[in-house]
Image (cartoon, rainbow, N blue to C red; front, side, top):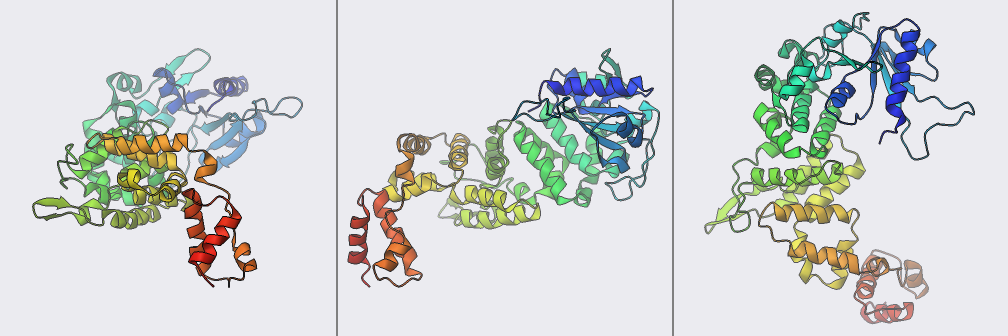
Length: 454
């Protein structure tokens, strides 16, 4: 979350650069958001000062992208050398970028060379979309609009700056960004821009998998996931980046359990229930929870079946996570969500020990939420959700995750030989403890000697 100092910090940078004889404006997404009455995620400044000049004029800069004309400027520390930002709040960092003129992009990502410019219009005309190509003087609120960006904001239109295929050829990721912005703001994609995306969609593979993953994650977590995936499908990008999701279309489901329609429709309904700010693992778990249904679809005795779809889905989700280079921790949680989403059907019949182990799974709040929206996106029956939630609320944490009554050391001291059998013995003791049949180490050892003789 940005501090209240963010806008003021960016405004001060503009003033300082102008006092030294340079042009400087707010630029890009922050201008768009300010005009829409939204709080910008961050503030960017565009200037005719070169990176070297910016670093000489402004204190405490970081030239992380100076070769591309970008310098980062954090909020300066106070006279005593302490941060002016309260503990726990994000330190405002403004990206100051030198005006650039248009150049070629042979690799579809990086410019072949960087040419600095003194003309703000030249800088705007090499940007991606008109709504991101506005500049603002924060001292007068004057807007510089060289490409009709304000009209497109009013019309609710995502349109490239200049010729669409040329803009997308420069950076293929812009095709995904067009979808994301259209979904986020509820806008339409300009017909010429849409046609260019549909034509160039197969070239999205030139973009690194990490960048694709981050764009898709933003689509899933910005609060408009359903619309984003509908647009991915319409543009042809879905078949390219997530063919496993595209294959859900037309895969029928048993109407008594899924009156809403096929697997793709069901998945879209789940995505529609993901609020902005959802965790990335919950969002991806929602997207992938039924990914194993298309390859396991069959009709037997006039009944639609998906035998083994969870096991198949876990393997498919693992491949998707590997392909998109998720971290091991993120992958583990996404796969756990896919693997366990059907277990809620048995939650009211589980043994006490099984139920408690289920409730204490890492990130169980995400499992619970996935089940809730899964139910609401199908038959609407949420009895198992309510039961699990009430159990989670009413059971003290020490009952769900009690301190073990005995350990492997206790078994060794009792004369048991260390080995794989220890896991079975300790597991049986834990189950009995969770079920309330054991309350002491002494009673635990009685059970061990009775059921697991040496």
